Image (cartoon, rainbow, N blue to C red; front, side, top):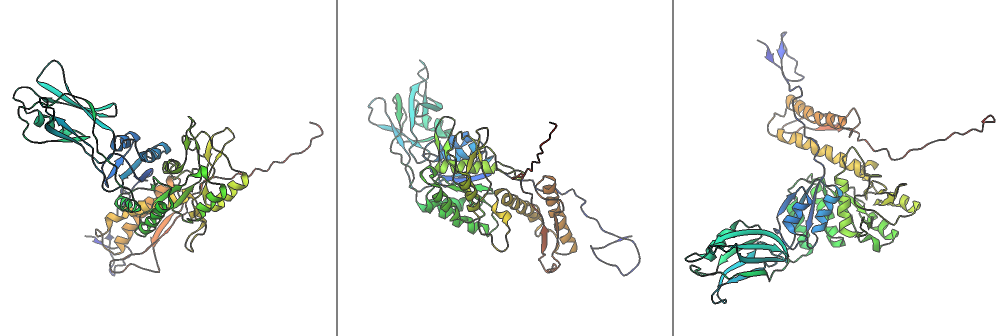
Length: 473
């Protein structure tokens, strides 16, 4: 019977030897693009908890529309597919309302309290459902918009307070508690009455640090802020540098109140970062309704547009979503912006507002970096390659031997990712992984070399026209 042999093994005796490998049924991980994250301020919603959204309506349902929730909505407007969102802040108070006894009108039977701290304008109404005296309902409003309605038993011998408390136990907006024994006590009919006493959480620079640290355990490709303050941007940059060392590959899009700044100030702001993971947007403009779009909203919009662009494409000359007009710069300024790492928009021949370039803020690549790291698309492609190979090979850690067979399995698995990205038009044909001959495997460790050239976008076309005067024409 044929014995098994290891890859590269030479047996001393003549004979038939066998081994088997996985021929290619390994499912390699696909690209996870369009995933963004943002910390926000809000007048409603869970504090310090990451929530996941795939539509802008989900953001509005979770956090309302106050404060800087429009930053998260702008990510979707730009083209993001998924948003990890976290509401920042400490303390804050929940609004509340005391529901009184019908007879005396002074005894509190039930206290209704908002589920989250903040100033969301919640109101409730207590009313009879009809002429039927055995049922009432409580209606919850956001301003004048009806959110929920719950019915509860009332009438002779009923515990109206307890029934109301039980009825609203499934509410997404309020909770209720009895103030004491409410048996045989009638709740007053109440017109639409606001909950009061709510306050939004306090926001400090530490709030941004806490939010980013909480987001750290989630997987996303891009991040934006709800602020253009330098101190908040500095916290994000510091966080990016720290988590990059742990293998978290994220691109951040920042910006400022750009309509208030001249070109030289925008240029200097971009140059101050000099970082392949930072895109600095100097774009500002108006939407189709003439509304100004600038500051953190524009940065989030640009972030969503970049996130929503596949790594087979570039944002260069891609329409800036939702922006109808801008004030253009001069040709010289556009050229200077590219060399300075400043992302700007320009106007196409048909009047469309589009991205003029696809640069990040990196100006001075490190000794182990080439100029490809200066482009958003190429950084995104390289990060995608690293992430996909990590996702494919990480499950093999501890599950295979550190020998020739184990090395072969790793190579086969990673090569599958490389082959997929070549087929997807992201890498040049010939991408390969092999064992590092200068560092052969030993003990529990193995070393590999990956050679891959990422594909750039066609950005410049040079046409030579040759004319001739023809006497006979």
